[in-house]
Image (cartoon, rainbow, N blue to C red; front, side):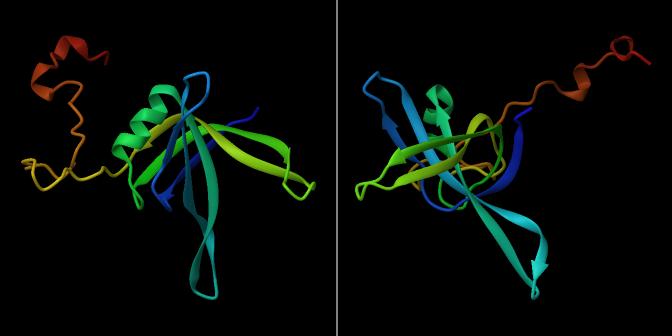
Length: 137
C-alpha cells in the first residue's frame, strides 16, 4: 500500500506549468513539522508535492506561500541524468487530494467580509434542515 497523509505549509508559491500535451501540473513544497523537538527547536521536513489537472489549477489559484494544506497522495520516485552525467533520484508525493486549511486573501480592491478570503465554503446543510426522521438513531 502506498498512501501518504501530510499537513504542512507551502514554503513558496506553487509553480504552475503546462506540459506539451496540454496537461496542467503544479509543483510545490510543504514544510511538515516533525513530532519531536531537537534542543527545544521545532524541526521540519520539506516534502515536494505534484498535483495534476483541475487540482493543479485550483492549487495555483488559491494557495500562496505560507498556506496550510492537507495532502493525501502516494510517494513516487524517478531518476534522471544531470548535466554532469551523474544519475539523480527524486522522491515526490503525487497529490490525490489537497485540502486548503487556510486560504489566499482577496485583493484589497474586492470587498471581503469573510475571514476565509478568496474561497468561502458553502455549508452542506444547515441544522434547521435536519428532520428528526432523518436521524438513524
